[in-house]
Length: 297
Ligand code: NAD
Image (cartoon, rainbow, N blue to C red; front, side, top):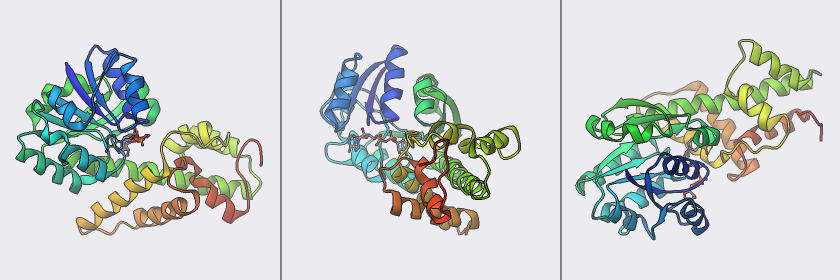
């Protein structure tokens, strides 16, 4: 199938590469030219704008870092909406239910179907094709694109309501965000009391403390102190804020989510939006006066 792909970052690049490897013909765009060049070297055609992509293919995928980027790529004057061939816009970004519904409505005016398709599973999942892919939108369009989505991961149809998949994704990322800061607090407490953090993580993973932070993030990026898991603190905080907004818009006050949100606001204030989200442990360490890791700094 001919597929457009806009946003070739940490997630978009490996997803686009998998689609090429699976035999699809890709037309790609990113505002970073080097990312476009790297995919062109793998056989993709380079485009000059989202409109240019949407002039050339019926199905346009996007993996973008902010609500504003998704809105602009979809609906600006040189956006997907202005393309002559496009029929479907598949947004793999995390943008929240309200923005997804706004983009869906704008594209519907241009006779373009939006499939809202946020993903979970990180850069490693994008490289291996093992992401959880959550999709909402018209069932028939989902069925048409399911074989393409199968290339990037395990696909779940969440419902036809615009934004439903975003609600699913925010619930998932609330748990992921919670696992990181909760595991950080647990390990910092242990280290303060003289425990070995590597042993602590092994015990969690053999016991009921097991979670995605103890299983993946601590062994790979926290204990070795490389802080390089591949997801920016700014993106994690975006997702936590979106989750809290979603809860409030539903009339809910989620006490754990509010506390987790406050912790992540501290992380972004002290570590910066560009830091890797595994650096969330550092403000907790600093307040405790300890450093967690195999090689104390
Ligand atoms: P990233 O910052 O690495 O990549 C975003 C890409 O979009 C960059 O290459 C950037 O140049 C490009 N871009 C930005 N604005 C653009 C525009 N207007 N037009 C064209 N290109 C533009 O981000 P990422 O980590 O790949 O995340 C992308 C999305 O996937 C986000 O919504 C994020 O929340 C979500 N996500 C990320 C992960 C992860 O582990 N990194 C996991 C699940 C979901």
